Length: 429
Image (tube, rainbow, N blue to C red; front, side, top):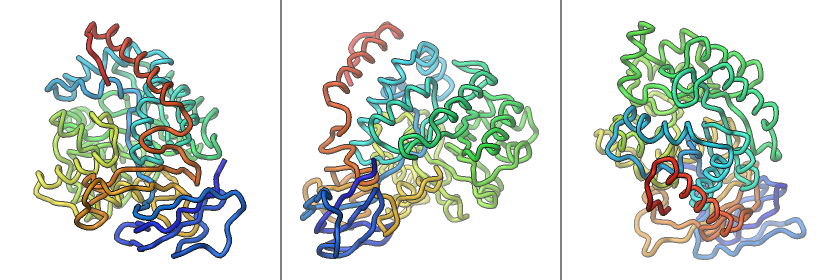
């Protein structure tokens, strides 16, 4: 249930990208911010939790707008592979062997990392998603969930997977007081046939759901699209289904300037995943070009070695420098907050009256120099408490709603599963 919370006398509140308030207090009533100011509010409901934030900083909650929670156990197994080699050697064996219990344990372990590091909203695309939804509900975080719908790959059967995605929507969309939403997930044009993509988009629009799809993650995607469909991936999809603001594109590394203009015109959301893009040699996405054209760009952890949104923000800054198109910390903070909420169709990403009480209380990690946006993007702050709609979901690196011992049990179970599947010992994470 939404909570009542007063965060009092924070040294600094980050209200929105580029906007701060010193000596700030924030009141959350029934899950939503009702007052922001200095000192104490004129009124607060009885039983309101009060957090003394002197010497601390408060910010909006962070977002991973593209995530594979089920890949958390294999997040260190990159081994110098490019994407297709990694899929064949690591991802494929894991995904084809996954059982419902594996998905639940992976989701809990991944969320324990993400939420304790400041995430209040995540998007996930994978399999056994009923179990993932159950994990999300138990943790208390917000999420947009979809099944990876594909005709080729580790889990074949586009029609069956689409039906599974639709059943997920019937059962879970709007559950957990609206914190859980369901989107449809035609995986990628290299794995899903045009008829499957078309049916997925049509079904989503009939139900008012969003669509998540991987586009131009690697150059092979572009070559495949041009060879088979006579145009680049985003142009092909627009011709096939008519892209719109309901479309969330993961990666977009190899989008052309014309496709970026198309994305801006159609109001498409693009999720940048710099860590996995660099580790798999996929490329450096043209993020500054996207932002300068007016595209809503968010950040996603994807299946990075650390399921940590701040680490992904740092990676985004590094990737932009390598591309020669540096991003300001406020740009990256926008991608990590407001843009992520907008992409997934949730209200939030700011600390203003009427916004949900999704917030993080931080302490400086040692001596703090520079401005607060630099500190947030480059890891100069440590999360102390994480709230979703005024309810505590993590504190001091631990989940509030799932005991630490239970998380450890899930990790131990996953170590055993990895040893069974890959025939290797020594997994410790």
